[in-house]
Length: 295
Image 1 (cartoon, rainbow, N blue to C red):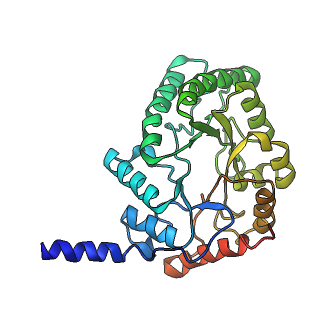
Image 2 (cartoon, rainbow, N blue to C red):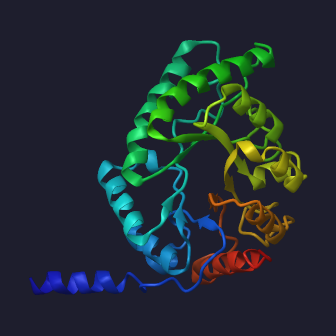
């Protein structure tokens, strides 16, 4: 019993502090592992460190692959810490073969089954959004046939998600640096698909890193697609590390979306430019600087 008491006391001490040291203007979402040098490998301890540093959300692409016990534990910790759950990936992504663009039924059936399974994951962790990647282009059918196929499949997925108030966010990916051969690449293309699906359960995940590479013109493109953008992700270019390590003026971009009234989550889907505790502190400082815009 004495040992258990010591363990509990140590666990409570590792909650860092009752109140965060700062309040960010936007809901930035780190991912597990980003601050492990400070907080260790325990998932709840990592969440406690994030909350203590002022972060109000979590992003975890791999949440669907975690055990039910871990999902329950994460969900409970998020509620206790008053943090929001950002995206997790709703399905298995095939980076080399057609999936949603395929004219055959097997890939579509597998996708819809996984979306259905992801509903329960979302409930456990309190998620609203889940990432969907349309997959690789099919080299034979005309691109318009592939678009029609993607739209039809996403309508079916939206019918699964709508009754639960869940939203799949479609992520256009750059093909010049990271994901050659992918179907969904640009903001206008994602906008067209969302308009065709015509469901509140199908929106855009605007990844600023990918779109800087693909098309640039970030703020005007965000404005044009604004009514279909539900989620944003961050990474500077080149390098895909924290803001301030590349060419994107994140203070201006963050200020712009804040003034537009964005209250959603900004996922920190990038690496740390430096290792160790100093590197982790550099990431936190980068968000302090990028968040220092005029409201």
